[in-house]
Length: 211
Image (cartoon, rainbow, N blue to C red; front, side, top):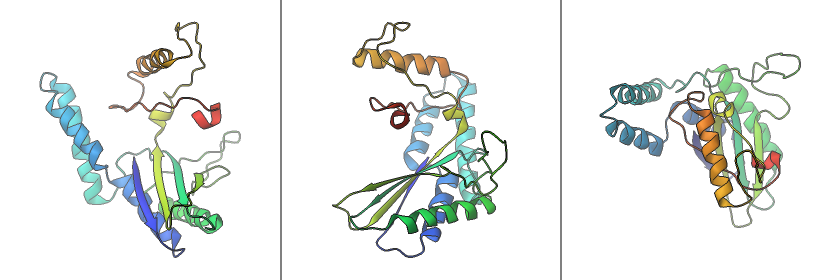
C-alpha cells in the first residue's frame, strides 16, 4: 500500500508524516479496491473466491471507518523522499523517525522491528536501517514529496531474485529469460503469500538495489 504527502516548507514533519502513516495503514488505495471489486464480479463461478474477495472489501471498509490497520501485519516501512536542491534531509529524516515511533504507540503500526541477532524487539520500530528511507534530489521540484510503502511479511517472504542466464530454468539473458523467471517466482509463491498478489518486477542493478 502507498500514500502521498507533500509540503512546501519545513514545518511539522512529524505531524505530516504521521498522517501519511495513518492513511497508508488504514485506507486501501482506490485503484486497489477497484481491482478487487472487478475480481469479485468475475468470480461468480467460484463462490469461495468471491466470498474471500468480498471479505477483503468488508475488512477494508471497516478499517477505514474505525481508523485501524487493514492488516495486523503493517510490514516494513519504506519511505521515498523527493526534495528540491538545497533542502535539508536531516529534519525530514528526524520527522519520519518521530512519526514512526508515535504511530507505533498509537496502534497504527505493529511492533515489527526485531534485532536479527539478539532477537530483541525495538518497540518503537526504530533501529539502524529501520525505517528504510530513500532520498532523491529533483532540481525541478519546489516542494517535498514523500511516499510510503508498507511491505508486509507475506509478500517479502515469497520474494525472489534470479541471475541470468539460469540453466535450471533454461532462461537466457533477455526478456524471454526475464519472463521465465517471473513465471517461476509466481508459481513457487502460490499458496504462500497473502492473496491476491501483485507481482513487482525489477530488472538490472545490483542485488541491493534490485530487491
